[in-house]
Length: 92
Image (tube, rainbow, N blue to C red; front, side, top):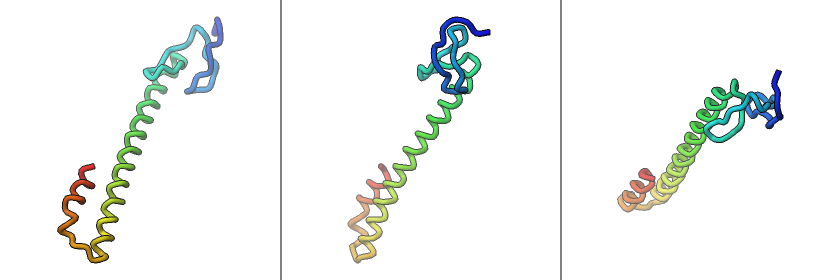
């Protein structure tokens, strides 16, 4: 039976965390000792998702820039004048 004070609620399992059964994650969240591994795994997954979202946003910006160049060329602009612009978009 847990003893001591209630310290809070575990963000992993939702149960109360008692004074005798807590640990801290690498991002400084209080969890049960038994939930620590799952919390660290969830943090790693979250970090991966955030990284992928940032990459997708960057690629979307590149695509939008290239679409603007293509539209200008379709409207009769000389493609030779867009070489530097295309290179700068690709190297974002």
